[in-house]
Length: 456
Image (cartoon, rainbow, N blue to C red; front, side, top):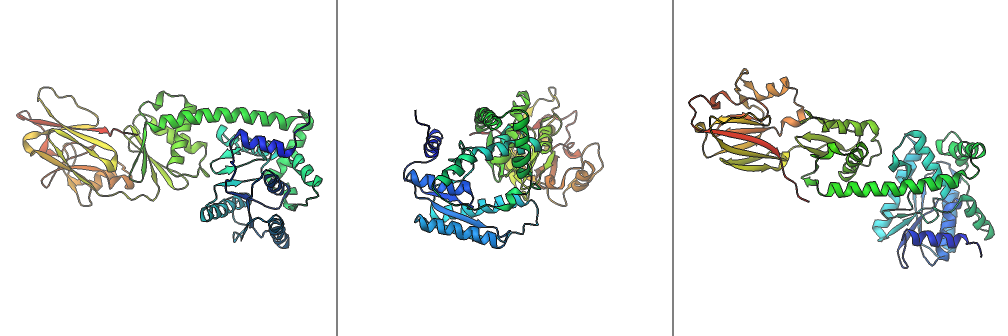
């Protein structure tokens, strides 16, 4: 039986992951290196007519410009659209590889958006996949990071992911097709290059001559398990997460009984759903969020790198933009009755109680009903509010917040119960002296706070 060619293998890879269909609009990110040049030719042989995109980082001066001209000439030779941009990023700022990757992603995305292109093909090979696996393993990563270079990821496809770098170069040599060599790829000061030129060869020589094949199989196993776990997490979140304004709100009532691995995945998925790129989120950050699930943590806030802040409010976690500014609110609560305060994700209920059947609750208060009308208003705290709670000295509410170390960002939305112009109760504090039930009280109202019910 004839051995399959590289083109055959790529066709099988495309079919296996349903990467592309005939007639799909396609963009290829082309550096000029062997992998991306090979991908262009293979996809042309398979009947696709992709556009070629090249981002000139300019970091190697004339060599970078020559790379760009090489890709442009390749596009002209094959009668393909060509897109080019010169990056203005300074290679001396931050992580050079990360900067280059981010700039390329933004460039490719803009081209696809403006030209209505459905898929982006990248020339990553089996070698790249194994190197990325080891890179993330040595740096410290969970399963999701170890399998981050997927054959199919959203609009990104990697048709060469089951082919080796040697097969790619052999393919090009057979066709007398030149490619560009980036001399920085030999510089072992870069971690990925050390893995490629030092770590992998030494491991292969010392332990397993078929190491790349073995690690590729390991990645396949981990990838399937990761898909299963991610699917379980998505199903769990669908019934427990919802949007409230700019926040993603997650009910976690049964999350504490789940395995720790599942809990961490839920928290990471919630961060992604809320808009985090996860680029600077590490294990310790996730553990800090997980600590919010412990008893007595309502009201706590976790500040994270990037655009998301996580806050616990009773049995819910709020994933909010870090620059979120709370809105004013005011609601009317009839007695008896209930009202949903959307801004804080809480339902407040008013119950009529018998004076001889009072059982204190942690998230509520008892008030002399004869001092109230048919309803009370619930509004957020306002600067200047004065409060006279039983058992504490009368003072501005701001001073009570400071004494209790209530975070600044939480004070603005703190619920205040008002009857006409008088403050009846401030949630989590004692009732106002003027509204405390007495032995002669004939009508007593219980205010109770519960997390708001969620719907999909």
